[in-house]
Image (cartoon, rainbow, N blue to C red; front, side, top):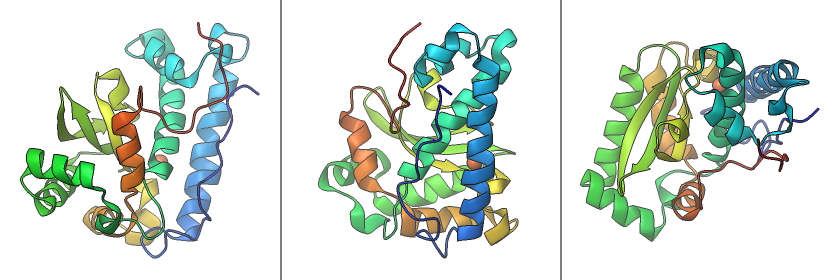
Length: 213
Ligand code: FE2
C-alpha cells in the first residue's frame, strides 16, 4: 500500500504520565492507523495513490469532491507531526537559544507563550489542533478545526498539539487544560520545533512517495 503508518519515535509508555500507554495504544494503533488505511482505500487506483502526502493534502484542500481524501491525508500528516512534536523528558528544558530568543521577541516571555498556547487550546471549540506557527517572520499560535493543517493556510507549523478528545480523554477526561499544560511542561520537543524553522518546508518524517502529480 502506498501510504504507510510511520513508526512512533518512542515507546508507547514513554510519555507517561501525561499520555498513558493505553491512550497511545488507541491513538496510534486505532486512530492514526485508521486514517492511513482509509486514505489508502480512498486513493487506490487514483493519481493520488502515487503522490507525496503533502501534495495530496494541498491538492484536495477546499475541494468538495475530495473532502474525505483531504481529511484522512491531513490526519495522517497531523499525527506524524504531533508525535514528533513530543519527546520523553521534553518541555522548557529542551528549548534552544534560537527559539528562546524568537519566543521572547514575539510573545514577550516564555511563560506568556505557555499561557497563550494553553488559553487558545482550551478555548478551541470541538476537535482540532493547537499549533505554534511561523507566519510572515513571526511566531504565533493558531488553532485549526478538525483535520486542517497550517500548511494549507500558508503558515509554517513548528509544534502541534492534538485537541481531539481521543488524545486526552482516557487520561484527563474533560480537563483539556491539564493535558495541554502537561504537553507544554513535560513533552514538547523543542529540537523538532527548531528543525522546522530551518527546513525547506514543514515536515514530519516523510511518506515514501516521490512521484508528484
Ligand atoms: Fe489524534
